[in-house]
Length: 388
Image (cartoon, rainbow, N blue to C red; front, side, top):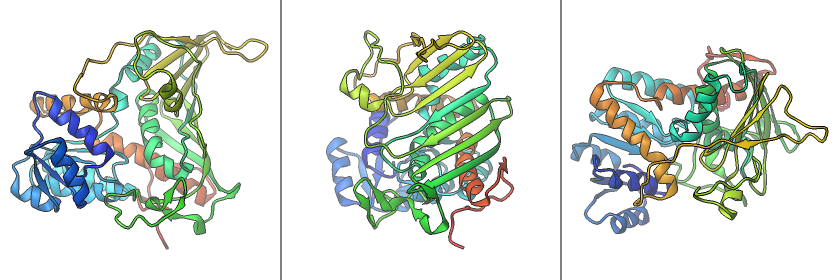
């Protein structure tokens, strides 16, 4: 593993909790992070320099759990040493870097997996099955909200990449985009562009070490709206804005036996995807897209605009008593990777899929500064926010 921060500890729980894996080495430039890893996993070999770890260890899988500015160089280096990679999202700091990663891993014959774990969860699989069964008829429109307490431009590469990956699982490939981005209520300008690591809820700060402390590339805007069209014929409105509290994204329905209820549930309902068709609506929300609701009918609202949402029973996640809740959502990514390696199959959370989510983010920025719609795949693969 490279990077032993908050998410790194979750990946480590998975590596140590699956019988088919063994955590053998952790690299982190920060001494305090290495000390935590040693305390959590006595006997693990620690490195300050990832390159030294790659040269020294015989590694099958490397987890890249830094922020995006480190994803491309570290993933490429791992592949050069023969390892398959699980990379955190967003997969890179720019679309051009994502292109390089996909091409490099194809040439190396190694698996590049992006940690879009929610597409493997019961919420995503159940929603896809309901759509295939015609529960709401042909999918026509989608509303996606990725709002959290960070400005929308920053949140695109954090929660937004998960939302876009989920929508692509459902709606297919995006074909065009038109977007508007605002900063303090007016059109964002190039003067508003910042590095992704320079924002915290308390204000702008220089984190100093982009590899570990938040640099997700160039970003802009505190609120935005974007319309995407997909090759399935569906149209999506995606929106993001700053919120002091996570908005509740679904009806207050308690489901017996479900974990993380009560106050934790209220704070965790931070994103939603609502799907609409001629026969009703589906809503996917929850802390890990682990809640699905359906409202049936051609226009399922009463005169007061109340929607009769009904919860959909989801398959239970496997019991993983040694893992935290978030680690348990990540575990299927590794289980699928082991099967993909053994059978030579593509992984459902592939680098190609991760690049598609990155391209949607790049399209939003490109459309805003072009003042016009852009077609996907983007012809210009350069970063639309990079200094000129």
